[in-house]
Amino acid sequence: LSEVAVRDLTQIIDEPVERGGTNKGFTPTDTALSALIGCTNVIGHKCADKLGIDIGHLQISAKCRFNRLGVTLAEEVDVPFEAIDLVVVADGPATQDQLQHVAVEVAKYCPLAKLFRGSGTVINEDWRKAG
Image (cartoon, rainbow, N blue to C red; front, side):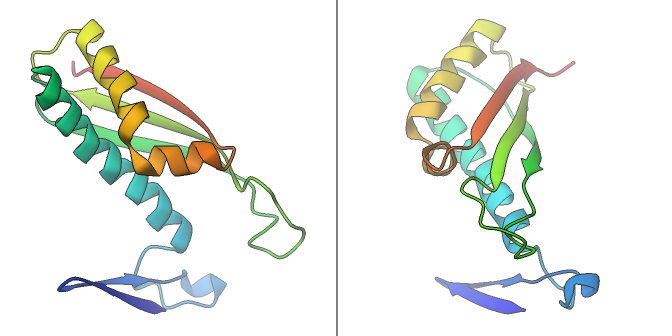
């Protein structure tokens, strides 16, 4: 269990009981994926605002193909997060073309997406309208 303090906030990062933790917080890898989702949301809204596009609220989900050999200490793994499927669903009036335009801009500016891609992770993004 790790308590991480940033500004006036504290976050718990932990492992499930079956892996020796207390299950009081996200795992480190859960935290990394959550950071990507949060960053996509924040940068997505900033880019949409800059472009004058109303994307409404975003619902974002991520599914990851993760190579566990490294975290189990079986062998060194160069790219543990092999691929991430990121689905971004917008409930605003933006058209599908406008959402794609926002997605292109987010790829340019989202630091977490850049971090993952720079490490060799393939991020498959699917931006779509709700409904």
